Length: 354
Image (cartoon, rainbow, N blue to C red; front, side):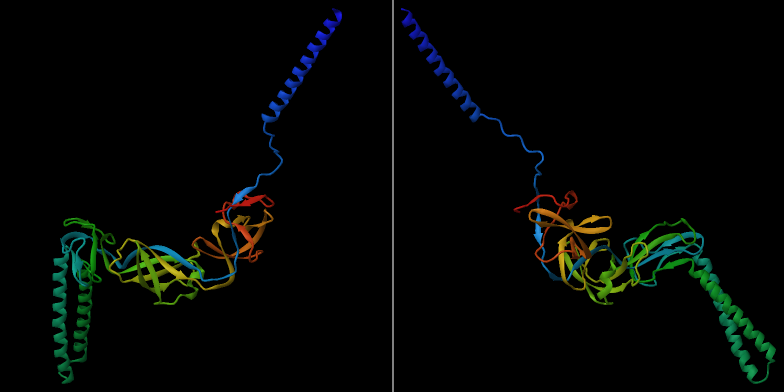
């Protein structure tokens, strides 16, 4: 009986061992299948994805656009030179007038006109008297002093006539050239003061485009050369009629004036002029966004074995969004094209597939 009991205990212990073994295997399999992700190695740098291009030596003829506003070729600000009261408006804003047409008159117009006519009549009468005296003088029927006094009187009356004429001409405003009255800032009965602008006259038969350009643009320019001008998808040709040879001391730019005769353009429109700069041989053209400015110097990032190298370059010129460069770079170098301010030398990178 005791022996049977021992066999039963042994059998139970074997079963327990098998159950424990199966439980251990199950737990091991569960841990292997559902083991947690390994922690990232925070010390390993993560490569940055960048856009890049390969440098190629080129002979570049830069084309640059400069924008300005179209203005009338002739403009005049009209004003009186004396105090007075407006009597008549002989033209209205928007009306076409010919050169010499009277536009505005003061009430003093009629008084000064009469004074001028009288002074002119006096001068004419005195001139006839001088002619008669000259005949008598030739016949020795008149003393020299009497003749001289007559001539002196003529000179005085002529001077008075010209002063009267000047005063009379200050009582009205004439068109200095044929054009359109752009604006009149005064009404009949208003009092005017000297040098106050009362009207504007413009000539829109031709338009002028004013643009300020860099010094390298004017190197190949000559007067009367054709310049391509465009506005609102309209392209035309203009003539370069003037340019500033010495730069503005504040902006270091040169002012250009381009004359355009094209009815499709209107005064006030924004327009751009296209200039072809002198050819730059054996240089590199890179996007502006690829150049890093640091302490007054220019750099690009060259990719070498998936790492960045910071190389100094020289910017020769700029047109549109392109820098023309040379310096510590060579053909077939691969450079980063944008977001360079966030990069640093030695950084690991990946080149974008785009």
